[in-house]
Picture (cartoon, rainbow, N blue to C red):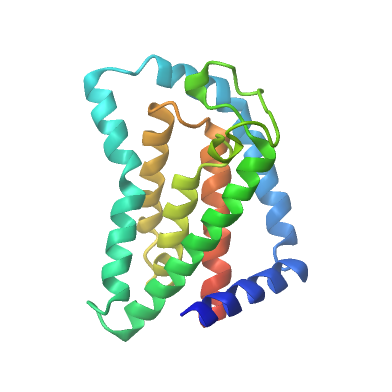
Length: 200
């Protein structure tokens, strides 16, 4: 498993180095910039929706990646046959690589979380607690990294909506701005897509 994971990581690095995602980077960067126009609004909305009912909904939505991880682990264990197990392993590798890349990006950016009330433009690169920064959302990254191989392998685009529900929770819980969740989801989607290409 470790050798497979290492090989996948090297191949992914090669795909990126060869510029296979160059166009996607421009498109993704544009989407993140566009969504940043909603950062303050999303933070204000979350601040005004902190009732008991909203908090329960937000916590439930924030746990979607955990539920997806458990389900993926069960499929990898062989509950639905070899094909599903192979796709699940691709999803697990995708989620792990996404989490690693997003952690490095968090450290480099170190954006304050909405709950800190410092605004969407407060950054402290490499500062204290940088690994716990707001940008990008690791919850969203993991959720999309887990569902993308299944959504594409089984022609099930509705899985993206399941992963997307995580955004509601992360914003309502005042953990992320709109651009954080968009960036996180794009990173997970790209990793899942590239690794599925490797599997195929």
